[in-house]
Length: 390
Image 1 (cartoon, helix red, strand yellow):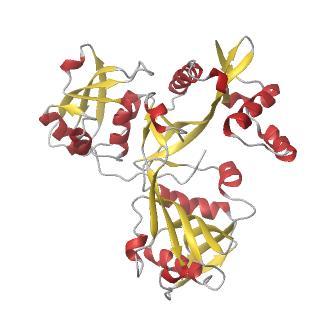
Image 2: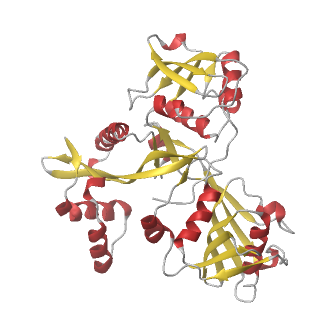
Image 3: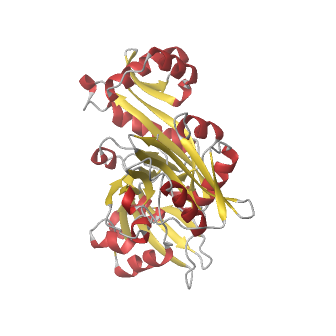
């Protein structure tokens, strides 16, 4: 098997496989446009005797972790022909791509799974979820008078991006967007925008939405303070003569809207969303800011990572009194470890999606009581979210 990046003239091979695997057909005009945007160097294929058997796209991103930007490799469009399934093509592609990301300094990787159990085998784990709301117009938030105003139709990406970043930086795992991403993946011709400005003229929140079949479809709702949230909801509620209700998606899991409604009994759904995995444990742990501990302390952790052997094995984990970490590989067997877990579990621990104590309760982290207590103590509380899709 030959694993390599595609060439520009292999666009049709790639697109034919995508259309078959994901059961869609691009009209000729959109296919031509996709061909113009095709970046062959981002698509990796597994070839047998010159035939494309499987492929995936590796996207270079940055994501917020603890308010800092971390390089991340986003995997998308993982596909193979049905006659080639269960022959190991995708497994070899994933292993190769992990090596590629590691060499490129991408310490994290994200993907949207077609099947969560499949990618768990390779070290990815669910790191965030989102809420979906369906709100009948009679249960909209109350209209309130606020100091400030909403301007509809604001398309200034610099304004939107500044607000987005100030909101997204609160969470672990949110995407840093560039201009091309805003234009190609966030905004569209059919969507509407509205920005809330304070009395001093400062933008403090925005909403991306559309009206479909007498329903407000709210794609993104970003606010920096309560005044902006109320102002934007009053603007949306003023559509009450035009719509029968509103639907919201990709709402962060810590959102409190239902509680704040006059009647919180609305239709709600929590949906497991993207998966993440640490690509390079040493680089990620040593760049992380842990909580200050009363003294410098060491623990030995065993990481199980079959597909990234540079992570697999025993590590001496030291956290200083100032919260800085050193992560050093040592020789020894698993039974010498104070703590033990798989790479996917370590990922969600570090993201803050799940706490050490609850994962230990269900056997996802094992260790002696002192080490587990130390782990619970040093990892800061955090929320995770993602407002994008790829």
